[in-house]
Length: 277
Image (cartoon, rainbow, N blue to C red; front, side):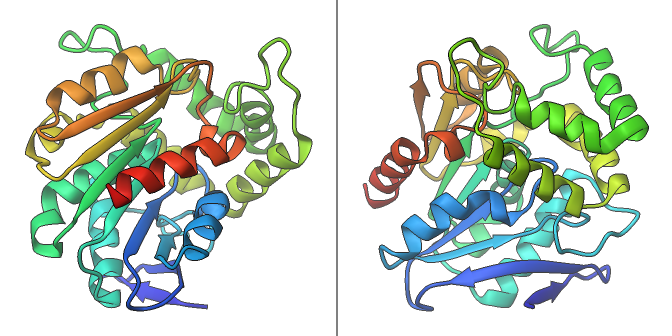
């Protein structure tokens, strides 16, 4: 299987599909998943002639289950290692949830050298999920402490509950639960390492991306469902768009956090329009 080894010796698994001279799209997955979460997008875009790349974050999926480095600085550096190894230029970077934070940190820190063309944040965690004096609309630390406790006590059951409930909005009245989608989420989560996932909660909840968003000057699309129960829209997309120099937002009425899977036809069409626009 294809791997890139980072400067600190971590083997990062990646997929690289499509023509090598095709326009590159780089996908960044959410917590605690893997590059498999982008199947609906990667198949759609590779069939349209794009080169599509996605990696498993360190400690996730098929990448090495290392003990350390589960923070946004390392995440972004790992992306830079993959981009450099593959020689990607003028890529569009697309991130979901935690992956959206990874995109923000990567584009702000490495984007100019890598010639990043555009960025997309889908249900993304920036600018900051945690409630603080400066961010009163965030979620209290007790929410994330609860995540850590549930993961440590019974990770398998916790992941099943997240996928079968708020992630895809299957806990909403009138929404049919798609059991295979839940199973696939659980499969991806359980393939990763518990230590990486535990530490990753701090990374996605306590990292402040305010300065990253301010530094991004490439065209950036912010996509968010207004019924996102994982990353509430009021303290994420609505704030991020105000910080971006060249941003545009697209809000989806009633869509859940996992809309790139459950509403992939709509999301893919809008992504294509932005990428080609």
